[in-house]
Figure 1: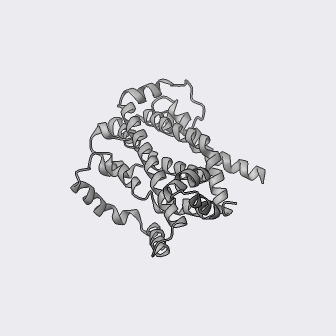
Figure 2 (figure 1 turned 90 degrees about the vertical axis):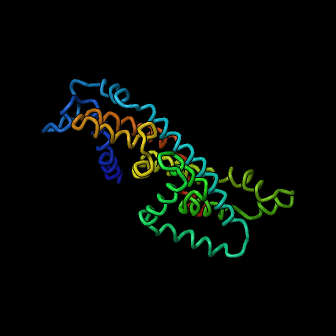
Figure 3 (figure 1 turned 135 degrees about the vertical axis):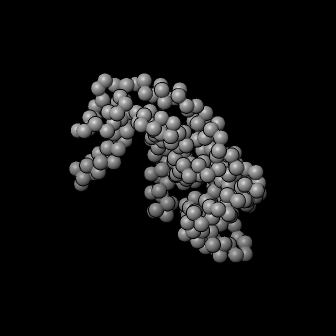
Length: 267
């Protein structure tokens, strides 16, 4: 079993190793045959060129801003919505939740055109508003479902005790529910960060100006600008991947804990 897991792990690491190796090679060496895994000589200047030939810092800042706003909006709105579905009683609650879950079956491409028309009429095209504002209105059906399942495992006695002490629903959510659901919120946060950090389609549709580009569009810009300069493309792609790896390692404890506890009923 251990040998199998090690083999699978190495297999998944091969693309990342090839990406880093290719980013340190000279022009044209990326497609040499037979392939060379260890570059010689090592071209660290590829990374310098990758961040200086295009406004890499601007792309990085735009991407961080979009990811941060989405993270804040998603965590707040999805946890509030999940709290309402899990702990509050109102007419049609269960039917509304079923309708919410059904939206996960709807492909995003179906709503692409009407959504674009709506944002264009609002004058939000070529701004980060279409990529960030929706996160503050629900946060996504999957995120709501994941956090709601976590809320459902918390004893209702905590709510009743808090209400007897004079706490309202807002205070119960903020002071009781949020601290108890850190693993679920951490899992949602990691999923949210990864999806928006690597998002290419959304920025491609809504962003026009180079100064508003994200890293995903910027890396594609290297290929459009210099064509066969693959050493720069690989170097910029490596720089784009490193933050994702760092975030995953920093948050893997919450990620694993959140998935495991949700799967076991939060116990």
